[in-house]
Length: 269
Image 1: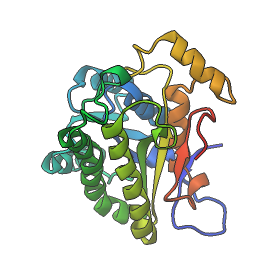
Image 2 (image 1 turned 45 degrees about the horizontal axis):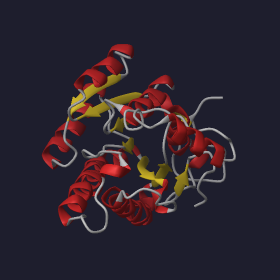
Image 3 (image 1 turned 180 degrees about the horizontal axis):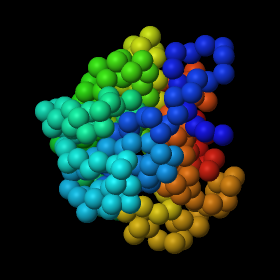
Image 4 (image 1 turned 30 degrees about the horizontal axis):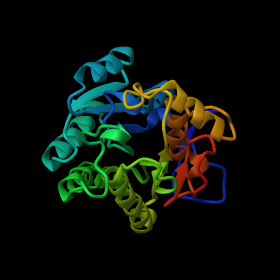
Protein backbone atom coordinates (compact mmCIF):
# COMPACT_ATOMS: atom_id res chain seq x y z
CA UNK A 1 0.00 0.00 0.00
CA UNK A 2 1.41 3.36 -1.01
CA UNK A 3 1.31 6.37 1.25
CA UNK A 4 -0.20 9.36 -0.48
CA UNK A 5 -1.00 13.00 -0.03
CA UNK A 6 -4.35 14.37 0.89
CA UNK A 7 -6.31 16.70 -1.33
CA UNK A 8 -9.60 18.40 -0.31
CA UNK A 9 -11.34 16.28 2.31
CA UNK A 10 -14.27 14.17 1.16
CA UNK A 11 -15.95 11.01 2.35
CA UNK A 12 -14.35 9.08 -0.51
CA UNK A 13 -11.17 7.05 -0.28
CA UNK A 14 -7.95 9.08 -0.05
CA UNK A 15 -6.98 10.42 -3.49
CA UNK A 16 -3.78 9.36 -5.21
CA UNK A 17 -1.16 12.05 -4.84
CA UNK A 18 1.62 9.79 -3.56
CA UNK A 19 4.36 10.85 -1.16
CA UNK A 20 6.90 10.60 -4.01
CA UNK A 21 5.19 13.67 -5.46
CA UNK A 22 5.56 15.67 -2.29
CA UNK A 23 8.29 18.25 -1.93
CA UNK A 24 9.32 18.34 1.72
CA UNK A 25 11.40 20.86 3.63
CA UNK A 26 12.94 19.49 6.83
CA UNK A 27 14.63 22.20 8.88
CA UNK A 28 17.65 21.31 10.95
CA UNK A 29 18.09 18.17 8.88
CA UNK A 30 21.89 17.97 8.87
CA UNK A 31 22.14 16.31 12.28
CA UNK A 32 20.26 14.54 15.06
CA UNK A 33 16.56 13.88 14.72
CA UNK A 34 16.44 15.96 11.55
CA UNK A 35 18.47 13.35 9.69
CA UNK A 36 15.95 10.64 10.60
CA UNK A 37 13.03 12.85 9.61
CA UNK A 38 14.55 13.66 6.23
CA UNK A 39 15.63 10.07 5.58
CA UNK A 40 12.15 8.73 6.35
CA UNK A 41 10.65 10.87 3.60
CA UNK A 42 13.47 10.07 1.21
CA UNK A 43 12.94 6.35 1.77
CA UNK A 44 9.31 6.83 0.71
CA UNK A 45 10.49 8.46 -2.52
CA UNK A 46 9.71 12.06 -1.62
CA UNK A 47 11.85 14.96 -2.75
CA UNK A 48 13.43 16.59 0.28
CA UNK A 49 15.14 19.90 0.95
CA UNK A 50 17.71 19.12 3.64
CA UNK A 51 18.01 22.41 5.51
CA UNK A 52 20.97 23.07 7.75
CA UNK A 53 22.70 25.98 9.48
CA UNK A 54 26.14 24.61 10.34
CA UNK A 55 25.88 20.83 9.76
CA UNK A 56 26.94 20.89 6.13
CA UNK A 57 28.69 17.53 6.27
CA UNK A 58 25.61 15.69 7.52
CA UNK A 59 23.35 17.39 5.00
CA UNK A 60 25.66 16.56 2.11
CA UNK A 61 25.87 12.94 3.26
CA UNK A 62 22.09 12.61 2.90
CA UNK A 63 22.20 14.15 -0.56
CA UNK A 64 24.95 11.71 -1.54
CA UNK A 65 22.67 8.82 -0.57
CA UNK A 66 19.70 10.25 -2.53
CA UNK A 67 21.20 12.46 -5.25
CA UNK A 68 18.04 12.59 -7.38
CA UNK A 69 15.68 13.35 -4.49
CA UNK A 70 17.57 15.51 -2.01
CA UNK A 71 18.87 19.05 -2.06
CA UNK A 72 20.96 20.52 0.76
CA UNK A 73 20.35 24.20 1.46
CA UNK A 74 22.04 26.29 4.15
CA UNK A 75 19.66 28.76 5.79
CA UNK A 76 19.17 30.14 9.28
CA UNK A 77 15.42 29.83 9.87
CA UNK A 78 15.53 33.01 11.97
CA UNK A 79 16.50 34.94 8.83
CA UNK A 80 13.38 35.47 6.73
CA UNK A 81 15.30 36.46 3.61
CA UNK A 82 17.38 33.28 3.83
CA UNK A 83 14.22 31.21 4.29
CA UNK A 84 12.55 32.82 1.28
CA UNK A 85 15.67 32.12 -0.79
CA UNK A 86 15.61 28.47 0.33
CA UNK A 87 12.02 28.00 -0.79
CA UNK A 88 12.74 29.74 -4.10
CA UNK A 89 15.73 27.48 -4.68
CA UNK A 90 13.65 24.40 -3.89
CA UNK A 91 11.05 25.41 -6.49
CA UNK A 92 13.71 26.16 -9.06
CA UNK A 93 15.57 22.88 -8.45
CA UNK A 94 12.54 20.56 -8.36
CA UNK A 95 10.16 22.54 -10.55
CA UNK A 96 7.35 22.45 -7.99
CA UNK A 97 6.25 24.24 -4.83
CA UNK A 98 6.96 22.92 -1.35
CA UNK A 99 3.93 20.98 -0.09
CA UNK A 100 5.19 19.62 3.23
CA UNK A 101 7.08 21.44 5.98
CA UNK A 102 8.71 19.80 8.99
CA UNK A 103 9.79 22.42 11.55
CA UNK A 104 12.55 20.64 13.43
CA UNK A 105 15.33 23.26 13.69
CA UNK A 106 16.42 24.14 17.21
CA UNK A 107 18.70 26.96 18.36
CA UNK A 108 21.85 26.05 20.24
CA UNK A 109 20.88 24.25 23.43
CA UNK A 110 22.66 21.98 25.90
CA UNK A 111 20.48 19.02 26.87
CA UNK A 112 22.08 18.75 30.26
CA UNK A 113 19.76 19.33 33.20
CA UNK A 114 22.63 19.98 35.59
CA UNK A 115 23.94 22.80 33.40
CA UNK A 116 20.64 24.56 32.68
CA UNK A 117 19.62 27.68 34.64
CA UNK A 118 17.15 27.19 37.46
CA UNK A 119 14.38 29.64 38.39
CA UNK A 120 16.80 31.97 40.18
CA UNK A 121 19.29 32.11 37.29
CA UNK A 122 16.90 32.07 34.35
CA UNK A 123 17.01 35.27 32.29
CA UNK A 124 14.85 36.70 29.54
CA UNK A 125 17.83 36.25 27.22
CA UNK A 126 17.58 32.48 27.74
CA UNK A 127 13.89 32.54 26.84
CA UNK A 128 14.31 34.93 23.92
CA UNK A 129 17.06 32.79 22.39
CA UNK A 130 14.74 29.79 22.28
CA UNK A 131 11.66 31.75 21.22
CA UNK A 132 13.60 33.27 18.33
CA UNK A 133 14.82 29.92 17.06
CA UNK A 134 11.68 27.88 17.67
CA UNK A 135 8.70 30.23 17.26
CA UNK A 136 10.16 32.87 14.98
CA UNK A 137 11.86 30.23 12.88
CA UNK A 138 8.60 28.32 12.43
CA UNK A 139 6.70 31.50 11.58
CA UNK A 140 9.25 32.33 8.88
CA UNK A 141 9.10 28.89 7.26
CA UNK A 142 5.31 28.66 7.45
CA UNK A 143 4.84 32.05 5.84
CA UNK A 144 7.35 31.18 3.12
CA UNK A 145 5.47 27.96 2.35
CA UNK A 146 1.90 29.25 2.12
CA UNK A 147 1.82 30.53 -1.45
CA UNK A 148 3.15 27.24 -2.80
CA UNK A 149 0.82 25.11 -0.70
CA UNK A 150 -2.19 27.13 -1.82
CA UNK A 151 -1.04 26.74 -5.40
CA UNK A 152 -0.77 22.97 -4.96
CA UNK A 153 -4.18 22.78 -3.29
CA UNK A 154 -2.94 21.20 -0.08
CA UNK A 155 -0.23 21.49 2.53
CA UNK A 156 1.11 19.58 5.49
CA UNK A 157 2.93 21.37 8.31
CA UNK A 158 4.41 19.34 11.16
CA UNK A 159 6.04 21.06 14.13
CA UNK A 160 8.36 19.20 16.47
CA UNK A 161 7.53 19.65 20.16
CA UNK A 162 8.37 18.00 23.48
CA UNK A 163 6.67 15.89 26.12
CA UNK A 164 8.13 18.18 28.78
CA UNK A 165 4.85 20.13 28.67
CA UNK A 166 3.27 17.25 30.54
CA UNK A 167 6.33 15.92 32.32
CA UNK A 168 8.73 18.78 33.28
CA UNK A 169 11.30 16.56 34.96
CA UNK A 170 14.31 18.67 33.93
CA UNK A 171 14.80 22.45 34.25
CA UNK A 172 14.56 23.23 30.55
CA UNK A 173 12.45 26.33 31.25
CA UNK A 174 13.46 28.27 28.14
CA UNK A 175 13.28 25.29 25.77
CA UNK A 176 9.89 24.15 27.06
CA UNK A 177 8.44 27.67 26.99
CA UNK A 178 9.44 28.06 23.35
CA UNK A 179 7.96 24.70 22.41
CA UNK A 180 4.75 25.63 24.27
CA UNK A 181 4.55 28.77 22.15
CA UNK A 182 4.99 26.58 19.08
CA UNK A 183 2.09 24.39 20.20
CA UNK A 184 -0.13 27.46 20.51
CA UNK A 185 0.97 28.59 17.05
CA UNK A 186 0.23 25.09 15.73
CA UNK A 187 -3.37 25.23 16.90
CA UNK A 188 -4.12 28.78 15.78
CA UNK A 189 -2.55 28.17 12.37
CA UNK A 190 -4.57 24.97 12.00
CA UNK A 191 -7.76 27.00 12.48
CA UNK A 192 -6.80 29.69 9.98
CA UNK A 193 -5.28 27.45 7.29
CA UNK A 194 -7.89 24.69 7.32
CA UNK A 195 -9.95 26.33 4.54
CA UNK A 196 -6.86 26.12 2.32
CA UNK A 197 -6.63 22.34 2.93
CA UNK A 198 -3.46 22.87 4.93
CA UNK A 199 -3.17 20.82 8.11
CA UNK A 200 -0.90 21.86 10.98
CA UNK A 201 0.07 19.37 13.68
CA UNK A 202 2.74 18.79 16.31
CA UNK A 203 4.70 15.67 17.22
CA UNK A 204 6.16 15.66 20.73
CA UNK A 205 8.74 13.27 22.07
CA UNK A 206 11.10 12.89 24.96
CA UNK A 207 14.52 11.34 25.16
CA UNK A 208 15.28 9.43 21.95
CA UNK A 209 17.69 6.53 21.59
CA UNK A 210 19.94 7.85 20.19
CA UNK A 211 20.51 11.32 18.73
CA UNK A 212 23.33 13.85 19.02
CA UNK A 213 21.43 15.44 21.89
CA UNK A 214 21.05 12.20 23.85
CA UNK A 215 24.41 10.62 23.07
CA UNK A 216 25.89 11.65 26.42
CA UNK A 217 22.92 10.37 28.40
CA UNK A 218 23.97 7.69 30.92
CA UNK A 219 22.73 4.19 30.20
CA UNK A 220 20.98 4.14 33.56
CA UNK A 221 18.74 7.01 32.46
CA UNK A 222 17.73 5.14 29.32
CA UNK A 223 16.98 2.08 31.44
CA UNK A 224 14.84 4.10 33.85
CA UNK A 225 12.80 5.65 31.06
CA UNK A 226 12.37 2.31 29.32
CA UNK A 227 11.07 0.72 32.51
CA UNK A 228 8.54 3.57 32.89
CA UNK A 229 6.95 3.13 29.46
CA UNK A 230 4.24 0.61 28.51
CA UNK A 231 6.48 -0.54 25.65
CA UNK A 232 9.42 -1.01 28.05
CA UNK A 233 11.83 0.67 25.67
CA UNK A 234 13.00 4.13 24.64
CA UNK A 235 11.63 5.51 21.38
CA UNK A 236 14.09 5.68 18.49
CA UNK A 237 14.46 8.63 16.10
CA UNK A 238 13.18 6.40 13.30
CA UNK A 239 10.03 5.55 15.25
CA UNK A 240 9.48 9.21 16.00
CA UNK A 241 9.91 10.10 12.33
CA UNK A 242 7.20 7.58 11.37
CA UNK A 243 4.64 9.93 12.92
CA UNK A 244 5.70 12.68 10.51
CA UNK A 245 4.95 10.32 7.62
CA UNK A 246 1.53 9.69 9.14
CA UNK A 247 0.71 13.40 9.26
CA UNK A 248 1.89 13.78 5.65
CA UNK A 249 -0.28 10.91 4.42
CA UNK A 250 -3.99 10.88 3.47
CA UNK A 251 -4.76 8.75 6.51
CA UNK A 252 -4.57 11.90 8.62
CA UNK A 253 -6.30 14.21 6.14
CA UNK A 254 -8.96 15.12 8.74
CA UNK A 255 -6.45 15.59 11.59
CA UNK A 256 -5.24 19.11 12.33
CA UNK A 257 -4.34 21.22 15.35
CA UNK A 258 -3.25 18.12 17.27
CA UNK A 259 -0.25 17.33 19.45
CA UNK A 260 0.72 13.67 19.13
CA UNK A 261 3.03 12.44 21.89
CA UNK A 262 5.41 9.77 20.57
CA UNK A 263 7.36 8.44 23.55
CA UNK A 264 6.29 4.84 24.03
CA UNK A 265 3.39 5.82 26.26
CA UNK A 266 5.50 7.49 28.96
CA UNK A 267 3.39 10.66 28.98
CA UNK A 268 -0.35 10.91 28.43
CA UNK A 269 -1.45 14.07 26.61
